Length: 396
Image (tube, rainbow, N blue to C red; front, side, top):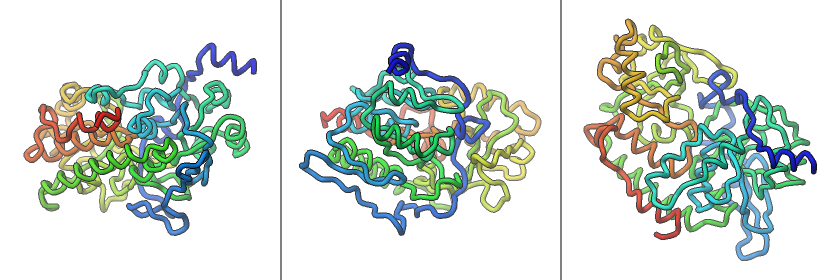
């Protein structure tokens, strides 16, 4: 108890590189692994339904890898490792219950600024980050959450936990509910994956918020269908090279494969674009594959559109004035078709939940198809902000 009181009084932010998630150790999603679900998320060895006991004092939710978890009451305090699961909880009206986050800088809450009445306390996120080459158990005791929205297998395989550590926190604090879904190339992830909305449905069951989930899913389906109806034919769509390079003057890039079905690439899948790396021997970035490509390698591919992750806090104009401007002056980069045509853009969030995905998909549509959906620097909006805000706040 003395250690818990000390941690609570002094804050729990920890510094250091994030194992499996930093630029040097696997910051994004990559190629598809074996033994994964289809794009619909349906495996052959696990039921897809969420088991709940409606109207009972307790209820259960089943999600891999943990399995069935029983709650005596709806959780009030919660923490997520990544911004995708945090965004799910916020979308379900649970923003006030957040106690911390795994990586505050990669939880892009600025999208909530466009939604009246929606937001989170950033000070809570920065004070209570779960960071480090290892994540200790003390913060889990100190925060006293009712549920941990994270994949415990990630804690074991990235941060040195044992299954006994997971069991200890589950028994003494609260259960884990989550699944590492933003990418699908980690060899240790040999259990089912979920699509964004399948995972969102599980989180909705945790918080007993079926109505909000169904309203957001209905609007999502309507939004995506509308975009896809207006898309150019497949032969007229650009091919895309997705990379990571956090520098304003990048010279080497970590490549990603769009054929991976992780949720961080959902918008590119929905918009039906082709992977510029298709047919090459270049693999996507993963925990075990740290390969980089330079401009010479890019030139052999010469993508129509180049996407660069690592610049999500820049505006489109700031990105063009820094990263694109550097490429335009670079001897080799300036020969790329994407650079010559000014089709180099920010690559999107690593972790995204349902609210963030609306914004990410709108941006992607305008990056790739400006003649159809308007330029990414324009004021044109492709979805109704007020409708989403109304669902989240309960005013719809």
